[in-house]
Length: 623
Ligand SMILES: [Fe+2]
Image 1 (cartoon, rainbow, N blue to C red):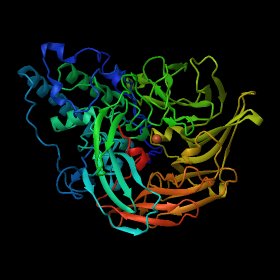
Image 2 (spheres, rainbow, N blue to C red):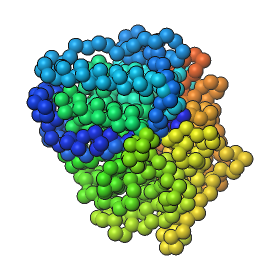
Image 3 (cartoon, protein in one colour):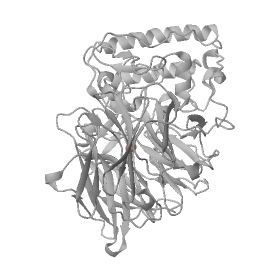
Image 4 (cartoon, protein in one colour):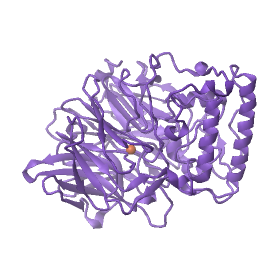
């Protein structure tokens, strides 16, 4: 999931897809411009990168909503190295400023013109940053807020085995729990939103009651290039792309591309939001790029294989919340575009990875769509009131807008549709769901039931507002015959808490479920525990981590896929103690909410986004 500082939701919801704006020339060789002959091939990724034939990625700009034009001097956060004395950075507010950007010599393959161009563009950027520092940053783009405390990044951690365990890890658990998160490699030089950080995967391998841990950056194209340059150069979709300053940063990036100083043609995504294990591959995803394959090694370590375009079948970005049908094994996904039509496409993959043709979904405006749902026969598409209007940047505003005049609605489309002619739209007034936890069909009433967390006010996600945010677990009933809908809170008002980030038993995804396990996102944006909610009765059982201990998405792991009891399984979640600065993995019995085991982790695990579990039997067939 993605619980973030100053904003709700989970992961990269509003990460605007940059590439569209960035460079419409992305299909051509930027290095040919201005007579430069860049040799960015040296920046290629690891040996297994999928580069036989680069996919024709058409990135989209994910405008980051939360971006506000700075209005007061910005003092850089201090990056220290408390967690580990070697590599990465940790932000600690209110200390003296140090820089972690290592002065790097220009890459050896740059020619004289490129070096001169780089110096000139650096000067322009310096002037831009100086100007930005004269204005305040909103909380939603201020790194001192966004990556403070345990939202701050950590260095990579090589695998550590035989970790201390309190209690007993159930012997039925064998495999690897992996969780994605944002972890900026470099100290931000200007605006930064938590969602902007580079993707890092944390992995706890469990084998016969013993546990090991490792965390690794996902080696995205942008991370590799920025590491070589020694500083961040790719625009941050949420923290920077706002108003005139955002336009200037896009132009700077465009100019660097023209000069062959950066290569944007193979994606600009950070792969920090979601994880899915599909067709023998672990995929790290953010909605502004195609997935990256990450391999779990036999020792429990992680290594990036490279961008994965499903054997050259995927030519567009992909949502970070694809759905695997537990019965058919198919993977369902969306792609949204914020610049040009079609604004939305639906596609699926068979269980062996064969992609269906794209189905273009007609939308009147480009709409932010972080998540969706499946039922046994349908995909459920939320077309809500948060839309992209890039022209707002020209007038100094955020490109993500809450459009009060737009009607919120859900689209119900057959999973096997070849076009959108039979899609059924059902309006659901003033509904904004960032995540949808499940959906199912109730043929007896001609309804599709959707379970999601409804946020109000919707624009509080994207802009600072005085009104406190609410995230209400809701049941939305969509009548496919009458076209009418109802929406009601599942939990009684007396017990209302903000619930975000979580799931149902994924072996029952798309079918009627009794329980959902959701993060108690209070005090927002921290997670003080999780709730097991009976979706039919509204009964809530809460599990709290304790004083100054916070977690994230509760991951439900079924004990036995064939168990008749839906809640027969365990909740896995990272918990961080803000008093001791220590992190652990907790394993909680989902039936009685009793702690079964706690794995002491060798290093801090920042609050993050979504995770998954890869069973040891699945790992045996990993590609
Ligand atoms: Fe998410």
